Structure formats: structure tokens, C-alpha cells
Amino acid sequence: MPDLTPIYLSLKLAFWTSLILLILGVPVAFLLSEWKSKLKIFVESLISLPIILPPSVIGFYLLIMFSPENGFGSFLQDLGIKLPFTFSGILFASVIYSFPFMVQPIQKSFENTPKRFWDISYTLGKTKFQTLLHVIIPNIKYALITGLILTFAHTMGEFGVILMIGGNIPGETKVASLAIYSDLEALNYQAAHVYSLILLGISILIIASVNFINHKRD
Image (cartoon, rainbow, N blue to C red; front, side, top):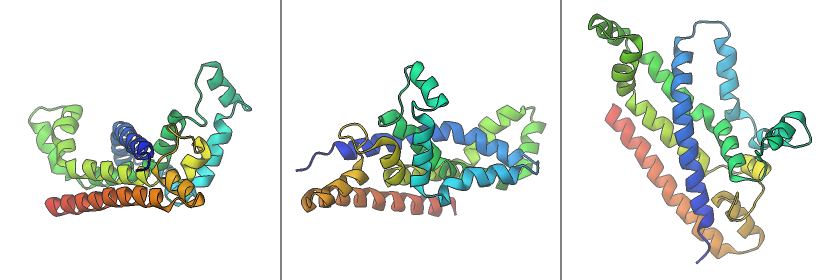
């Protein structure tokens, strides 16, 4: 039986990435849905960039940015913060890389929410924040769940960006996708099969969850 630590690290990384992005993604998505400036297109394009940009490029520039060789990386090191080749580093990279998968479905749901929901709540004496918290966000719950599932699934399958910023350190940054790669290089097909089958099972559960949510929403 192969070591299941890479599976645990993948699940841990996906969990924390999804949680952090839910906290960050909701306010960002709401602000984008309300924003009327011409700069909105530029900001949306910037957020969507990780979807089309090769992950190795993202990982490379993050590695350069956090390197002690440059000013920002040296500043972080002086504060005792080390990101390259650590779990914290791959978590930060995953948050950047999966950001659009959380923000986009939530933003679209905010934009598609009927204006009358706001108007009715205002006539009942609710403030904008109360309306957002108690009326709008519960109304877009399926978008929130979809964002969480997509982010979790995307993080579970990450490879290039994690390899660049985290290396392939057992017990620290060696997630399941890197373990499969390492085992194939070592011709350890049995271990690669186990990791692959576990990821396959998780993927099937994720797809079934998304389909179930879409069915409920319809």
C-alpha cells in the first residue's frame, strides 16, 4: 500500500484554498457586479488570466517574486516568512491560480439577481448590508456551492504551479498529482494506479455534486 500522505496534502490544500477563496471571492464578486467603470473589463480580464495562462508561467513568476534574491522576497524573509518550497507557498499559489473559478460563478449570480429583491428589502427597512447578508447571499447559495466545488476540483488537479513554487518535497509539497508523476518516473505503476484511482473517485463525486446542484437549481 503506497503512502497516502500526498492524498492528504491534496485534500488539505484543496480545503484551505476553497475556504480562503470563499472568504475573498464573495466580496470581490459583489464589488465587480456593482462596478460600472470602464476599468471593470481590465480587472475581470486580470482575474481570468490564470484560466488561460500556463501554470508553469504563474509558478515561475511567483518563485521569482518570493525569492530572497529580490526585494520583496528578502523583505518576507526578514519577517520570517518563507514561501518557496513550503506548504504555505503552494497554498498561496493555489489561491492565485484558482481565483477565477470562485469569483466568476458568484459574480454572474450577483448580476443575475433581480433588482426587485433589493427594492423589496429596502421597503421593509433593511440596509444594503442587511439585504446582501440576509436576502441576496442566501439566494445565490447554489453559485457559492458551485464555486467551492470548482475551486476544490481545480486545486486537486494542480500540477505545474505547485511543482514550480513548491518543488516535490515528500510530506510538505508532494501532492497527489506530483506523486503520480514521481511514481511513473520510478516505474512504480502500482502506486501510481492507487493515487490515480483515488483522484478518479474524487473527480466522479465532484462531477456528480455539480450535476446535482444544477438539477436542484433548475
